[in-house]
Length: 421
Image (cartoon, rainbow, N blue to C red; front, side, top):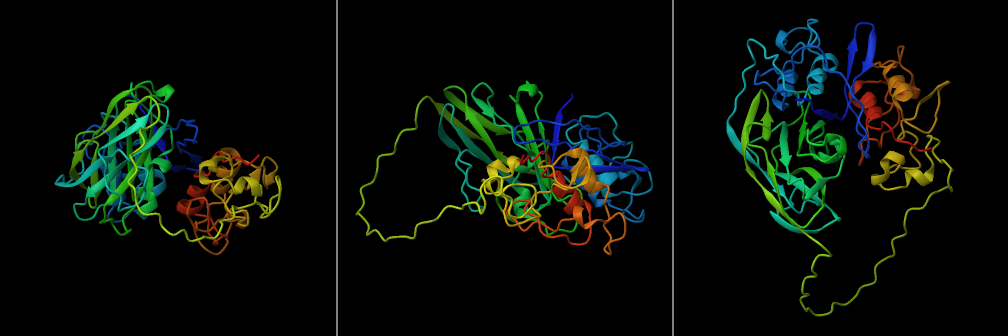
C-alpha cells in the first residue's frame, strides 16, 4: 500500500554528494515527494516501518563504527550507523509496508502499560488539561481534538498514534506534523505523520498516523501526562461522529529505550455535529462584582510601515508582526531579530530574495555544513544561526560558530516555503 509521509525534515549524505530528502508540507498541504534510503527500515521484522524501528536505529547510533554498531541498522552498509544516512533513512520509510524483514529481526519488549485518550475539547495545550469525551460542534466551524497520555508507564521516549474518524461527518484540516505534534513543544525531538490512503489527493482521509520522539538516546525521558497531539476537524453534516485510536500495540503505542513498545489502553470520543449556532447555556445569576479598572493593552505595531524592514532579514516589519498562524508569510517573528527569517541565498549568491526555498537557501546551508567549531571551510557565518529562543522553532538567534544538522539544517528546513515577498 502506497502512503504519503509528511516528515519535519531529514537528509542523506551519499558519496561525494549531498542530497536533500525531506518531505515538507506547507500549511496549505502541498507535498514534495522524496525517496527513502537504501536498506530495510523494518528492523523488528513485523512487516511495517513503525516508531519502534526508528527507536531501534537510534539505539545503535555508531558514527565511528564501534559499539553499539549493528549491521542490521546500517541502511547503506558502510560500516557506520549515523544520523544522516541510517537513522533518518529509517524515518523516511515510516509508514511503509514492506516484505524486506531481516532474517534475524531486532528483539523488542512489548509490555502492557500507559493509556491514551481522545479529548473532544482539545483546544488547550496545558499539560493539566482534562479529557472531555463528548462535545457539540456547529457544521462548518473548525474545532480542535487532542490525544492525551492519561497514564505514563514510567518514562517514555516517544509516542505513536493512528486516529480514525467518521469521514462523511468530519473533515480533517491539513496541517504539518510539526503543527499537529505537541511532543516537540514539551520534550524536543522530531515528529512525522502519514495520511490514510482514502481520497488522499483531496485531503479527505480515513485516518492520520502521527509519531513524536527523540531521534537519539540521551535526552531525559518524559514521565508526565497531558496532550501530546492536536488535530483540527470541521463538521460537514449533522450527526454523531466517533473518533477512535487503532488497536493498542499496532499503531497506538508508547515507546522507551532500549526497544520497549508499551501497549496502552485506549479511549475514544464523540463529536455531535449540529446545524446552526451552539445553544447558549442558561446563565447563573451571581452578585455583580466591583469592576476594577485595568490598563489598556496597546496592540503591537510595526516600527516601520510596509515594506520597512528594521532588522534587515528580508522580511518586513508588517509581516513579522503577524501572528504565528501566518508563519508561512513571515508571521510569528520579531521585527528586531535579524536571525529569525532564514533567507540567505539568491540566484546571484549570498543575499536575500524574500523567500526560503530549496535550491538556494536549504542547499546553501547544507553546502556550508561544518559541525566543528573554529570556522574552517566551508563554514560561513552568513549561513549560520544560533539555537531558537522560542516560542517557535524559527525564532533563532545569532550565529554560534558551527553549521550542524539539528540546529542549522533542520532550522532552515522548518522554514521551507516561508515567503515574505
